[in-house]
Amino acid sequence: MHPLVTALVGRMEGLLAGLEAARDPARFFLGTYLRTTRAVGAALGRGVFEDPDWVAGWDVDFAGLYLDALEAHRRDAGSVAGPWRLAFGADPGLRPEAHVLLGMNAHINFDLPQSLVRMIPPTDFTSPSVLDRRRRDHERIDEVLASRVAEEDVALERAGGRRTTLDRALAPANRQASRLFLRESRRKVWVNTGALHAARLRGPAAYAERLADLEEASAARVRDLLRPGPVLLRLAVYGFGVTLPAS
Image (cartoon, rainbow, N blue to C red):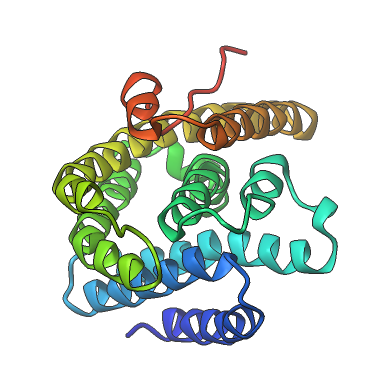
């Protein structure tokens, strides 16, 4: 495993131990994220990515946005951005997979474009070959995530998730939907990354304004997921990802 990812796994394991001891529902998303991070580390070892050092650095930066938010929330629940405040503040009695869905949504929609802009400097955006390489490695993460869906479904059931016969019958459909939602959201993330980069070029004030737009849109999507009713149907209609409004 890449040393940067090894250190990240260690940080996650330490935080997860505390969440499990406290029976904090945030443990469900962090547990899933930890297993996924190990899978990314294994993929790095297999040579899946074109630029493994960049992917490792990006993986750590991206995860850090979530882990920093988690630690800040545990110190002061009101100190985190809107999407995370809603995800972390969700009803503890929700099923484990619901907490995972909320965490994934906040992290992908709000954190991922920020991390990509941080890890792709302005000079890289002027090089089509470098930018394409970054995009391809960004898309390869989907393959790692998709490979984890079935195993995570089982892990969450063991943690107290799906119990009914109907839930188990719907599991294959849910897995397929999860793969589709991940691909759809990451396409939107790439577009939003370009929008944040364009704002970055206009200066700090413009970037802050677009980031506030992203926070608002991401929080609205988490809020929608928290509404009662068929979540998968709403995702099918509105999608998992968000799109920044035109500036």
